[in-house]
Length: 280
Image (cartoon, rainbow, N blue to C red):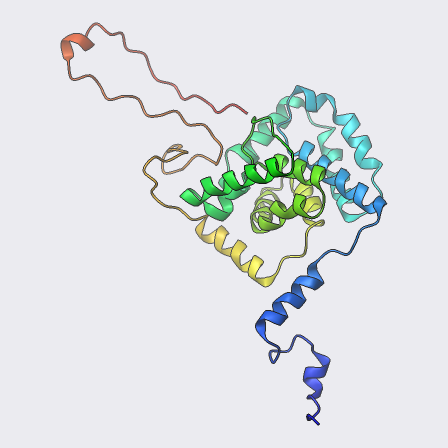
């Protein structure tokens, strides 16, 4: 008969005496969401779709729909996510359209730490990011969903719409994979005191809680930024003195060097160059 296990081991099933692989699987099982009722599934899907809509650029169509969006949030069953979305729509419905547009651009287009392109946080400006985007597109097609091509497949509203359409399993897998990027966006929006932090907070309540490894990775992202490498042709280009364009921003190529044929160039009128802003 084997000797009885020490009281400390019996009291703590996650003791260090248990193999690491087993501890990892136990933690994963604890963090896995329980089976949802049909009502809970419907509410979860609605929250995902509302987050997708509320994180899109506030153009005229979305601005006009603010009362409808606020009513949809008010109709949600009570939950932490519903409370967060209520706080956001309370702000959204009181803002002038031009102020909304300026705030959105400032938060999501001009700041790298709160960009909505998720693969950037995991892969940075590396070759791996291109493969990650391709993998996302393949996932969408395999599920029978064809995006309209207006945004990159890792744009958070696109990922959220896929999750709403496909469900908690495979549909939410990209969100779980990019949990650390979502945490960074939420923290950046909170540091900026942006009301959009409430939308990210609502989303994060639907995902498994962060691990210590997640928190450490977010701290490294804040301190060091995403991975980077020289890929020959920088897809984002320089964005001013010592800065890089946020992911997804279109940056025109540099102007061609001056002609080496002065006689020919003398007859070509010169025009000042101007920066072309990215289309949203």
